[in-house]
Length: 339
Image 1: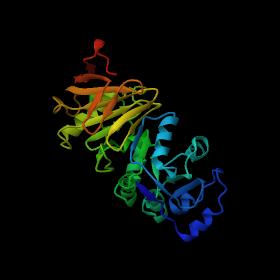
Image 2: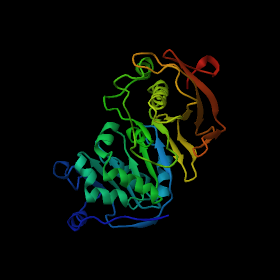
Image 3: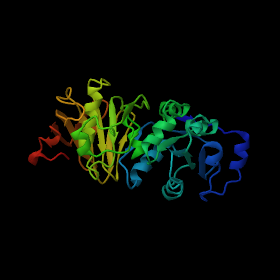
Image 4: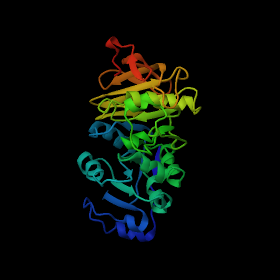
């Protein structure tokens, strides 16, 4: 599908002509306009043929082949990174190390006002690929939710260009999200009390294909997050947000590439876990350990299996069930292993 990048304001365009590429020098200062903007590559507008898709990455080291998959989907156009903290490190990585794009642009959005800024919106709306970097997902929720930037992110996918995210950027891609408003939470805390003050969930943020009714989680096995993902699913059903909820947990150094038909494949070193509830939790109450039985799981890795998000069915992977009983999580796998 063809996409075309929007042109910024005249004054800013003049500034872009003066860029020395790959210097890491911001072209707009956050204390003045609420964001920093960095460019590597060609500042001119470009039109390319793009292919829709989603890239869901589990955090830690980015997977080159997964990012190349997204670059291919961009048709060699302008690859835009958005984040709320950090640096422009993706610019030299995407533009110079991996190559194959007209430019790589990083926008660090540090004030909510920037989510209304015409230049920021134009850059996002005109992206041939859009990637949300890691950081703190609460920054993304508080700065982006309910703003024109939220709509602009969705517009990229509607126009047929790939959208992705890693770590905190992955956390906000589903219909439901762990917002981390009060900070993170570990599995043992969540299972012990599913209404713990740190179990902060949000909905009605992004609406992307194949992620309706879905909540995602990253750094999955490394940070032992299966228990908290099961708890998030229990809360989504218990709170009446959905009769049936689904979760996707992705390991570090691992990414899930989803094509326009919902067919998903894994890049990287780890596994991806697809969870689905089969009913309401038996016990999901404040200050009471969770009991939630028969949550189905399907596990795939790069060498083992594929998954169809449209039908929520996998093949070539491993299927099993999880049950939390009085806050203790076990499975139908031999030995009761949860991963």
